[in-house]
Amino acid sequence: MRRAPRGFALILVMLVIIALTAIVAGFAISMKTEMTLARNADYDDELEWMGRSGIELARYELANKCAEMRNIDALNQPWAGGHSPCSNDVDQVPMEGDLGRGHFAISIKDMERKWDINLVANSRGPQTDILQKALEEVGVTDADKASTIADSILDWVSPTSEPRFNGAKDDYYLSLTPPYTCKDGPIDDISELLLVKGVTPEIFWGSFSTNHPESSYHQSGGSTTETRANGFRNDHPDIYPIGLSDLFSPMGGKLNVNTADRKTLMLIPGMDENTVDQVLRQRAGPDGQDGTEDDAPFENPAQIMGGLGGMGGNIQGGPQAGTAAGGLAAYVDVRSYVFEVKVQTEINGYKRTFDGIISRSGPSGGQIKCVRFYWEN
Image (spheres, rainbow, N blue to C red):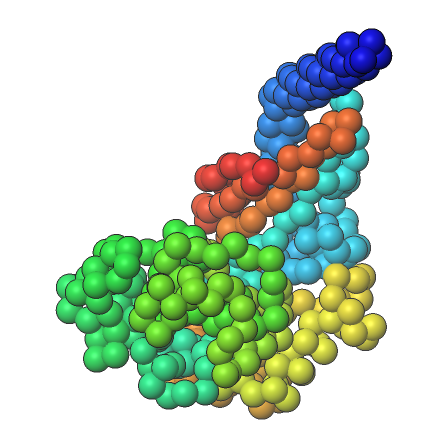
């Protein structure tokens, strides 16, 4: 009986030690977290200025193009990571390197490598053909579904109050849960298409694209509840090899045939697979690789349009002069005017990615300014 108090005291001592250890460990973790947050806060301003410096460096790169390639934008130019021979005396600045105690990497993509959804949806001409061809390329084979999506995209952008035959306006969107109104104006972010009637995550991103967060407004059969119940999975019977986000951008100008890829070139009215293959082969040069020294980018859109404008085309089977080619002149170019810049920064393992939108304007494209700057994470 005498040993019981001693055993009890020993248990109490052990419990006190365990409690003190937990308190000290919690304090240490808290201090480490506070130090990490303080360090990150200290890095925030420095990383932001590295991001802004990256945008300025991108502006410099776009302003100092080769004199012999000043009137075109192509994948073999330095801003796009290409390696074209250049007679320009201005030294090319590397797009990756160290700055102060940090590291940065810059990538630039022109918006005109995709179709400007607002230009397609707002202009008179072959916009219906382009939208229809885009939906075919995505894999929307049902005619009613394709018509619904095309009309609804046009209605989303149009300021008119009456919907098209298969489209949608406020009456439809206000009936959803949660309700919202039709945009009735230009698309500012391509993800707005997820709000449009008939556009599912699979149609927007493609069936095989992953790691996309589910939006509160994902559409599926006119009901957001069904989509939330399913989650972002390929539960639909149709398979979509690509998505609308691969074909369209929210801003830019005419489609640049020097930077557009195969799937976007396929949307040009009057172009078939053989013609697109010819465009890509001629553009890439003898080695068949875009972005190398032997590239032969087009100097005028008429070179792929079968004589449009009286200049004579170089691509056999290209769109011929007439209705299709005449309408196409409003959509195709060899220059780009809006560029998306991504700046990845890092200091001692702390990373942040910044995005910027740079626009080029003026008669010779010499006015280059940043119109948007924000950070991703």
